[in-house]
Length: 114
Image 1 (cartoon, rainbow, N blue to C red):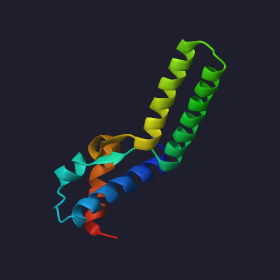
Image 2 (cartoon, rainbow, N blue to C red; image 1 turned 60 degrees about the vertical axis):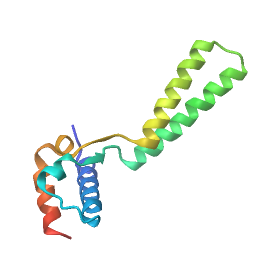
Image 3 (cartoon, rainbow, N blue to C red; image 1 turned 120 degrees about the vertical axis):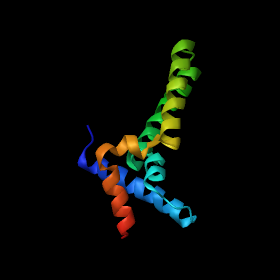
Image 4 (tube, rainbow, N blue to C red; image 1 turned 30 degrees about the vertical axis):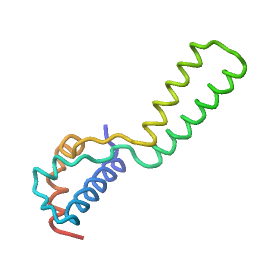
């Protein structure tokens, strides 16, 4: 379930992506708007993922120097890489899927302007 703040973030992200396209003089129709891929993870969550990934990586490094179980170290390294990649790259999905029923309202707001 999406909270009101997260839904607001998703709408702003969709508007930002549509404005990028319109600045490049590409007409943004409803189908193009619905097909836009937007960031679904808020910036503070991405920063938290990076911090957690660095912590997991540091733990794996420490365990490596303490000569602990190699399987556990390998698991922690894989987990750190996954967490860091989510934090650095994020997660993008199409507007149509992310906003469900409010996508057309956001598109109308884009047409109306600021």
